[in-house]
Image 1 (cartoon, rainbow, N blue to C red):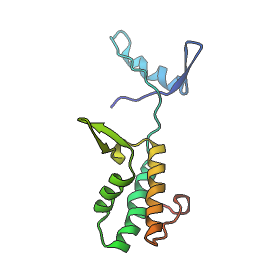
Image 2: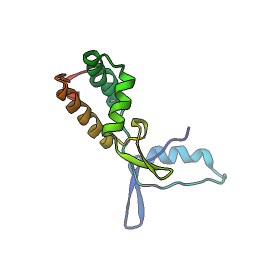
Image 3: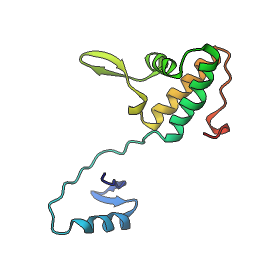
Image 4: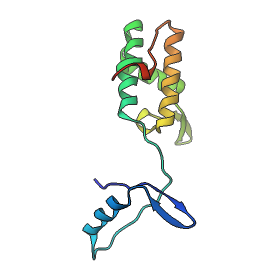
Length: 129
């Protein structure tokens, strides 16, 4: 696995957030041909968000409805997930491919779904997962 280094571009110059670590890492490639990939930063969902989704929100709805967390996950993806086009058809994006912002929005919709069923799901900040 290769590490990645975040930064910004300012006046055509790269400004790395952790410059020393970057230079320490690239010393390993002295004299070698390398490849550099630059792309827009995309916030990734966190393990805490996934743990909350499966271990709190979906679990509480599952206990109330009798459906498995997997069944509810599929239902919620179909109903609330952002859509992507695949082979000319719209399909739900899976949580694995969500950004952290998309995951937060999805979790909010799952919480509202629970509320419609009279399931009280605690706020993510109020539980330890």
